[in-house]
Image 1 (spheres, rainbow, N blue to C red):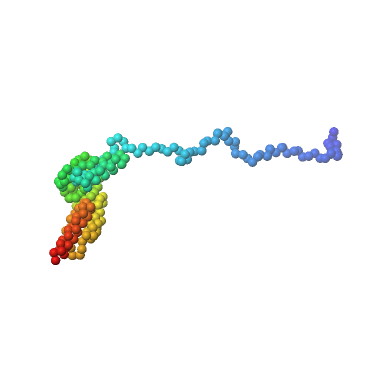
Image 2 (spheres, one colour):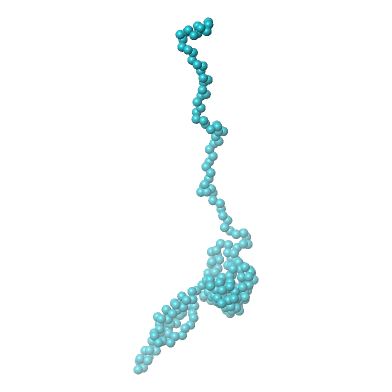
Length: 231
C-alpha cells in the first residue's frame, strides 16, 4: 500500500494521536496520608475531673502554736471566765496549745513574775493584762525575742518610749471603757435626783452596782418618810 492510497482513502483522517491519558483526576489533593489513626485518646481531664489533692492541715509534730495567757489572779469570778475562755479557745483551735497562768494572790509584782515566766518559756505568743508600766521590761524582752504579744483587758502604755508598746496599747482586746462608763452613768441616773450627792466607785459586777443603788434609794426614801412622820 502506497502513501497515495492512504491519501485517497475516504476514511476520516486519523485522529491526532491521543494525548496520553490524563492522570486520573486527583481527588482534591489529600494531605499526605496520615499514619493509621491511633485510637482516640480520652479527653484530658479538666481540673474538675481530677481527684482533689488532699491537703494535710496538720503541722509536723512539735510544731503546734504555743500561746500563753497571763491572768491577774486565780479563783476570782471575773478571772475564772478569762481562764475558762482561754482554755476553751485552745481546744477549738487546730494545732494550738494554750497555757493559762496567774498568781494565787494579786499584786503587780506577782503578775510581773508570771509574765517573766511566760517569756522564759519562749512560746509563739503571750497575752498580757497590761495594767502598769512595771510590766514593760518583760514585754519588751518578749518582743525582742520575736514573741508575739497581745494586750487585753488593760492596756496602759500609750506614752511608752517603745513604739511597739505604744502600738500594742492602741490595739488591745477587751472591755470598751467608754461604753462601760456610759452604762454605769445610765444606772446612776435611774436612782438619783437633781442635787443628790454622789459617790462614784468601780465595780466589775453590774448587778452588784444595781443592787447597791437600789438599796441606797430605799434608804433615802425611808429617811424621807421618817422626816415627814416626825414633822
